[in-house]
Image (tube, rainbow, N blue to C red):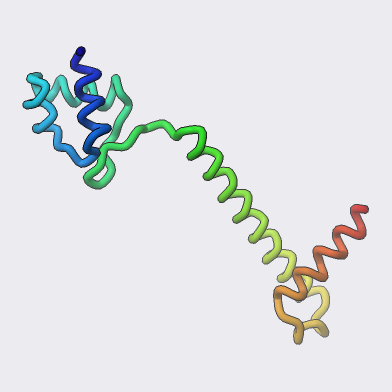
Length: 111
């Protein structure tokens, strides 16, 4: 088994393993081990854990969903603020009610 595979197996088995421990177990210098981990395998140290640099497909989908939800929430909030400015007499309604009214008006206009 090549050094690359040994280092990768050690990191996958224990993400908190130290560079010195990996270098001693594999029998290579710390500099060579660091090169393999960061350049060849693409890991980086975050806090005390080794994590891959690239996002997986699932991580990308989760990030996209989260951003979409935040965008929708901020849009609803902005629409509520616009509606409150345009219709001060409706100030007694809660922000949620105003958002829903504004969204229903937008849907009626688009349809």
